[in-house]
Length: 287
Image (tube, rainbow, N blue to C red; front, side, top):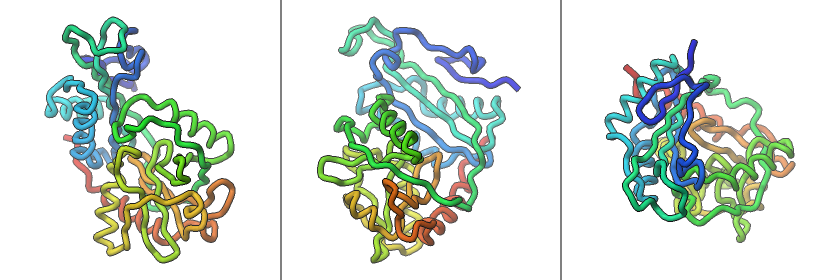
């Protein structure tokens, strides 16, 4: 079966999809992206993801390439063409094609829109054995709240983690506090039973899965706190886990080679994953 991508107004064969060599996203990382999870053919938190895309575009003063309602139609049509049931939709909007110059183009250009899909294994309520984390210095810029395509520091951190045998990197600021993962948000459960994740500011991306989990945690009457936590506190925590559109809730059982808690998946992370999987199954259906 052919796989399709959407590139600037056309549905094209994924193998031959391309953008112009002077697309500012390619040359200057002048663009933003968004990823929406798909479960059983349903979009998970679509509205919140598109709201975040809108915010990112506004922060970089990039216009919408198509109307918001049109974007929804394109996503669904691409899912239909690719017969996507479980996986993700990747959207990228750049400032467009213009003669290379660091400053914005002086003549109007049309923002460029690329959308692709990816089939993935259907995540279930079983979190598996948990993952290992490797700490890494946070060397990113000071506007991590914008979901830009400028991800080289994240790439280097993720690669360092993989080379050490870990699944994910946790980025640590100059105060010794964990900001977030290379591609996830970071959480711990303290020995007092508090569910802790860093507050949303310009130091982290306001994760959509993070937002939904916060709502679920409140409904479950868990002690939820938004504050910084240090790497040392994380290593002494009762539990730890990561969240994202692609990993849902994934328990962390080891940080820098040290066991978290008893080194096994904890009850809080397990319960939150079960609740999130139930929530994700109620996503927005594709027709």
